[in-house]
Image 1 (tube, rainbow, N blue to C red):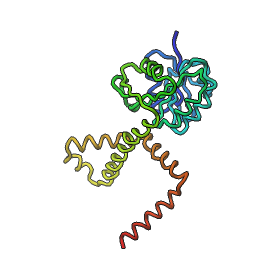
Image 2 (image 1 turned 135 degrees about the vertical axis):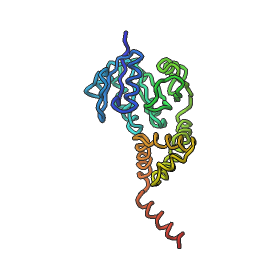
Image 3 (image 1 turned 30 degrees about the vertical axis):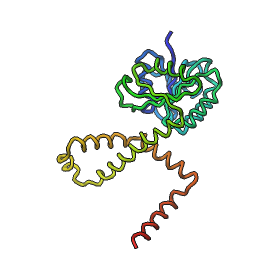
Image 4 (image 1 turned 120 degrees about the vertical axis):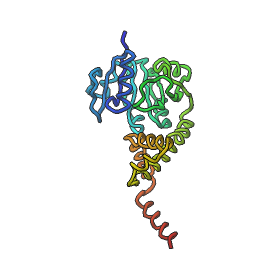
Length: 246
């Protein structure tokens, strides 16, 4: 019997990747995306979020991190008994709490794939698993779905601390690099003069300047803005610089 998986966010970059992946390993794909068009012919397009998940064996959420906890709350009560809800967000504290509150009839699988939509295959790619109820059972299911991947298990709090370094620091360094290079009026000459290290760094910097990192920066700004007036902070910085320059 062919298993069904609902891909929520199937029109996004990671949604497309997972839709293709599960299609290749024999799943029937039901897709739903409120923001992006789903173009793949093998995806059965659902008309609503609840309609996508009602009769599926698995649901995978390829949705923005800040929206994921609310989506979990919306769909978990409607999913069929003994089905699996997989979520792949990059921040786990709130999503893991939402998974903990799901009805016991639903099996949570909380993972963070450490690869992007450019990955050609799952083999040897890293996937982080955050235990929710039963680490052994959840890891067994995850390994059966993503055969050949390398798994690391860590709790949600430690995950978010590590990811702040792994992604945050790396992105910061590369954004700084890209910012300087963008001001180079003779970049072609710079590239002709450069060695392998510079070329590799330039490729890495260019590759991360995607919609994902832009959304990541916006999410940080939104969080800061809840307790701080960012515009006032910028004005304070300008005043500080004027004082230092005197």
